[in-house]
Length: 128
Image (cartoon, rainbow, N blue to C red):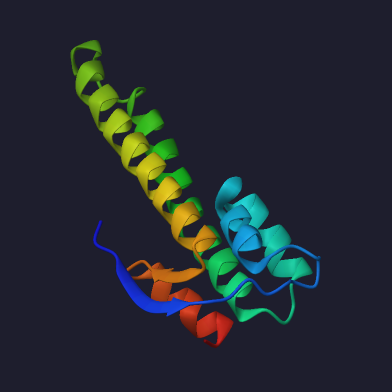
């Protein structure tokens, strides 16, 4: 889980919804892809918000799918393997929680914080 930051820090500009840019950026991550989609659809001009909304969508959907796959493993493995699957699920959930907190904090600080693969996608789509 290595991160790369562009180092760009924005001011406290207002968005078209009347929120400060940094608050809206943090809210993009609040409910994962749901708030990402909401902010992507409602904020047309602000590239900072678009970046965080796209990155939120691009990271939360794969994490959700991964959690569903791990949950489905319970049906295919014997009872003796449940503890291993449980630990794996716990570790992925913990990593997701830490990532969620870091991304929200970085957005709230007004920073464009790029994750390795999804950050490049978000940057290209937001046209930073």
